[in-house]
Length: 82
Length: 82
Image 1 (cartoon, rainbow over the protein chains, first blue to last red):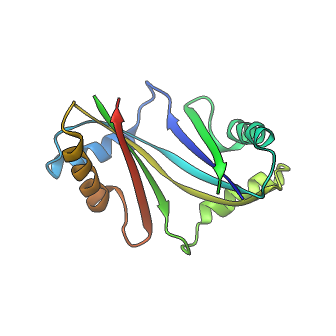
Image 2 (cartoon, rainbow over the protein chains, first blue to last red):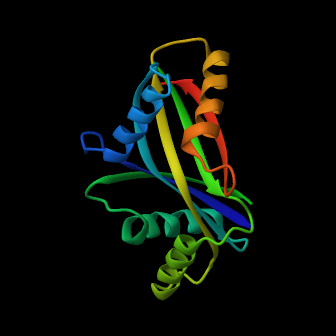
């Protein structure tokens, strides 16, 4: 099996209310050292074995078409044996 | 600056309705090769420079106390220069 790990984050400059809320919670629990928090999505896609370069192309398509909102989100991914 | 990248996923066996919905959407768009989808959280924590082993301990604490629900979620993280 092959697993693609997709990391989706908000683009720089986009307001991140979740990140702000988590930062506030961390500070209120005494973790003042935290300067910034960005909250995003982590998606694991599992495939049958296949041609890695072809899968790479397909995962990129999936990211653009379905998994992310290209207007406000950036994505990276890595593909490897599951 | 130092950045901790936290990956949070549902424990094996825990129902993942989001993952199921994404899988259905991918299949309906012709990506039948996708066997499974797991959706989780990806959190980036930024710190001022500091002792990496101390930060490692603190990030682990933050994961256990605030960032994850230990009953249904697993986490891993990596720490590096930002």
